[in-house]
Amino acid sequence: MTHDDNPAAEQRRNRNVEALRTYFRLLEQQDIDAWITLWADNCAMVVPYASGDLPSALSGKSEIHALYKNIAAGFTRLEFTHIELHPLHDPDKVFARWNPRCELVGGGVYTNESVGLFEFDDDGLIRHFSEYFNPAGFVENYETFS
Amino acid sequence: MIMGHVRSMSNDARRIRNMETLQTYFRLLEGRNIDAWITLWAEDCSIIAPYATGDIPKMINGKSSVYSFYREQAASYVALRFAGTEIYPFHDPDKVLARWYPRGELHGGYIYTNENIGVFEFNGEGSITRFFEYFNPVGVLEKSNISG
Image (cartoon, rainbow over all chains, first blue to last red; front, side, top):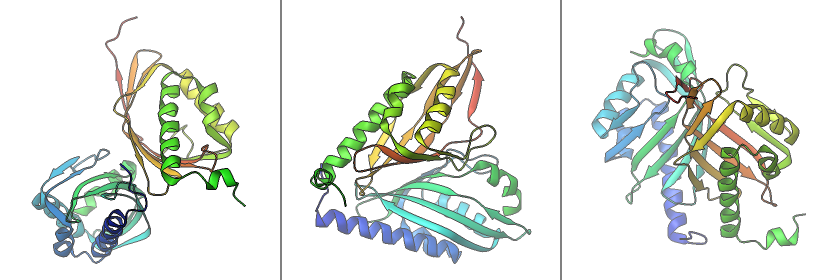
């Protein structure tokens, strides 16, 4: 199957990239109630390098909402110092690379370099997200998140 | 100026060529045939591994350095497999995303496993110019039950 010069595919690709721009903006604003509307009801998230209290798999919008509400509550400020969005040839997949910088409620700053593969459904909602980050940085700081 | 024959290659043809190169890449790594594997790389290539720790460098520049490092790595395995490798082309025809699950049997009877994801960038001739590799720095290492 080819998506070259296919206006419908290009439109989907652009829509999904735009959804991810909104995704990171809403995370920076710590507006998790708006952010969760970008996800499909039957969404899933896998975090293969998760360690400590962070789960390596989440299923469903409510689980993802609860985890991110909890994480966001641990930040006084969150910014992404670098974001790259690279659409795949499959218009429903986007690869992202981003650098979070979080000022924590308990003091200190958490930074990492993360990458992930986002998969969208026909309606442009995120149905699957695989996230990779350096667990060394995360383990060091996770206790201060909650 | 880009050569005419490169220009004339369609985006789809470039994607297919680069994906096939990655299939060859993993097959040659499984065979630990680093002398053949290194021919897939451009002279001015580089590897960036942001999560690398210990003796694994975060950056390797140039074909000869990549060759030396992988020769050394390959020599530490008695067998290496990449079952279930996923290869996805980017819309940019010169980039390919891969996710792979190395399982290596090391000298001494240990088994190393991990889940890696990486972005490969190719030049107009289809050689790898840059590779961003992400792996769990605390990859699993277990003593195997394999005897002998």
